[in-house]
Each structure stands twice: as C-alpha cells, then as structure tokens.
Image (cartoon, rainbow over all chains, first blue to last red):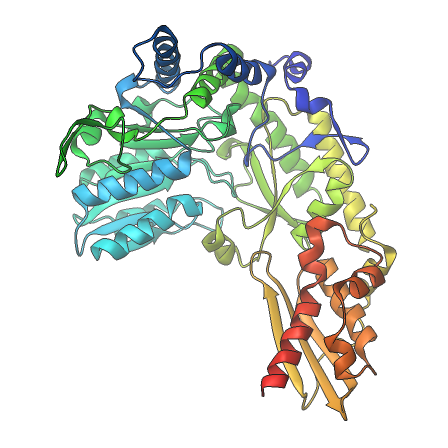
Length: 406
Length: 122
C-alpha cells in the first residue's frame, strides 16, 4: 500500500487551490506533477554542478558528466536494460521520430510495409506516415475491436515478409488498453519486422522490463513519470542502435570530422547530437529513485484501485458513455468517457470550476476518435498521488454537471 | 458552476432560430476543427437589412448558445451594422466568457463575418 499522506506531502503543487477548491489533478497522462525531491535535484544541479557534459577537462564538467551518466544507469536499471542501450532524447515524440527516421533509412524501401494501430497517439503515427511517403512504403493499421482491444487476428493477417516495422502503443492514452506486447513482438519476429513500442503511458505506471516485452525499441518521456519536461528516453537493442544511421547530427555524436565527411561516436552517443538535457536527466534519475522507492508494483496497484473505482462509478451512471475495456485489469490508469449530448469541453470547464483538472479533446488520437465516431472525449488519468476521495469528488461533480444541463 | 450563466444554458436547452431557410442570401459554415464545434448560419437579406436568420450546428454549449443568441441579436440589423459588430458585443451579451473558451463563443461571429465577406465578394 502506498502511504498516500506521505506521498502527497512530497508534491508541493497539491497544496494549492483552483477556483477556491483544493486542486484535484486528474490529468497525469498528459503530464505528471513533480515531487520536491525532483524539483530540488534539478535546482541543486544548477546551483552546484552545472557544466556541459562530455567536454570539459575541469572538475565541474567531470562531476556533471558523472551525474548525467548515473541518470542513464538508473533509467536502464528501471527498465531492465543496459545503459549503452539507453539514448536520452527530448521526449517520446523525438524518440519515435528518431526510430522512424533511422530505422526507415536502414530497413525500409519501396513496396515495404509499416504496421501501426488505430489507437496510436499522433506521435507514433505521423513519423511513420512521413517515412512511408518518403520511401514509397505502405502504411496499414491494425484494427481495434469494439471492446477497445487490438485485433490480433487482423495483425496476423496483415503481417507479411514485406512488413519491416510494427509500431504499437503499450498502453493507449485514450482507451487505457494494455496491449500484449510480448505476443505482438513474437508474431512480428516471425516475419523479421522490428517492433517499436510507445511506452509513454506504461513505463511511468507499471513494472516494465525490456527483456520481458521482447520489443526492439521502447520510447517514453520523463515528464510523465515525475521528472522534468524536455527529456525522454529511447531504448533500443544494441545491434539495432549500432546498425542504424544517426538522426540529428552535430556535436557530441561524431568521432572524427573532416570538411567533407565524418565518423560516428559509439552508441548511445551517436544519437545524442548537441548539448543533451543533462539537468533534466539528473531530475529524471531522481524521479526514477522516487518511483523505485515506492515500488512500481505498488504504483500499478494504486492506479488499478483508482481506475476500478472510477470505472464502477462511471458505468453506474446511465448518462455516461465509457470508452475502452470495461475490465480495469485490462487498462492503465486512464479512463475516457462522455456525458450524453454534452460536449467534453463543457464538462472540463465546469469541473475546473470545482478545482478538478481533466483533459477534454481528441488527446492527439484523431483516427481513434473518428473510429469511435465522436469529435472528442473527456479523460481522467491517475497517478500515485491521487486518492479514492478525489475519484468520488470527481464523480459527484459529474452529477452536478449533468444537472446543470438539464 | 459559474462560467455557464443561466442564459447560456437556457439558449443551449432552447435554441432560437434553429433550422434552415429556403433561399438564403448568406449561407456559411464555420468550424473549430480541434474541438469539433460547427456552426452554419443562414441569412435572408432584403434592402440591406437582415429579414430572417437560422442556424444549425453541433458542439459545446458555449458555441451553440452563442450562435442562438447571435441570431436574436442580428435580426433586423443592417449589413453595415453587422460588419461593425465587435467581439465584445456578443461576449457581454453572453454574460462574459472565460478566456479558455473565447474561441468557442466567437465561432458564430466568425461565421457571420465570413458570410458577409463572401457575399461582398460575390
């Protein structure tokens, strides 16, 4: 069990009020709040150790480099990976663009196929669209069932020897669905396709081990897992990272440079052009320490408890339509829904008056909303600092919204 | 639940001038693609004056209530009065709108301006 009182004490923002009410923050799938340990670690870095990494020959730069590399080791341990397979990026979006570009250059040609899913966030869709256009490859999407699950039979039917990439989200940021990555990876491996996983909604919320997933690439963001904005992670299998050409180029990623050519640095540095977000990395390392201290199994159980409570409450209200699996065990801590006949923006604005922050819109998943035949949806998402009482506050505020409109 | 003045909810529940016209002089659609709000405005104009007006649409309460209210405000007005209509007139008629939702409230007015300018060109 998470010691909620102690955890909430660590998050300064939870003490503030919004529109005269205590803040009820139910939008952690968009970005998480930060514990003081992370805020202080970043401040301390700037106050005591700030210098550019991997360059200076002076003490300060050596200390900064050590802290940066220590953060890489922490992140690697967190997902059961080797530090040399951990590339720091500026976020999940950059990480996915990196894979789409570099993997595309190395492995995708005219007539090849790229498989995505109908539930992808735009960040795991647009880079593949552009790659397909650039290379004359074909892009297809694995179907989502009425229950909000990936149709694995459709995946099997669409896989062919021409399939070079299967790009799939681990946890849907709208439906909440936890996709069976090990099974998908095993199917993709049969045809020799690389498996790229958008883990932005999974790594922050549940134990994730790259060994167990069996994928080839995994991308996630620091800011959704208690860390700072501006830092993300791309994990890739070493043999892939070594094979692929670089994405962004410039300083740091090179070994030797002439006017007309250059050679590349070792992985992961080959993919870290320019000054990396090292202060943010230190913050992310501290966030990983914080999550490890709580225990990811505990974090998952807490999410599950809140999701179960929210789902039960929403499903019990006949004016609410819920999207995605009805079984909380099949979900991450994300629930999207609508109030019948009421636009989600109205719901979000009215809840905001009660200090309740929820997301409303298409959540960067327009194809999925088109499939659900709705212009937008409301979404609540939970994290380790949310309480069952907050879920109840949210549910009774929904009743008020419904009443206000009738 | 303050930002929704009773006026907005009342127009949302009982929209005025909802429907379509037979042979409108102005027929215009404007949308906020990001949130899916859509408003279609139809005006019948005789001798420079709005004789009749209808709207259709879907979306949030603010955009639809604003459209309903706007139809009441413009009936009987001259085209030149409409061309000079300021955002503030609609916003204050709505009882004020919070800043995160201004684009919703102003959608029908954008539709009206688009319709007027298309008519001017035609």
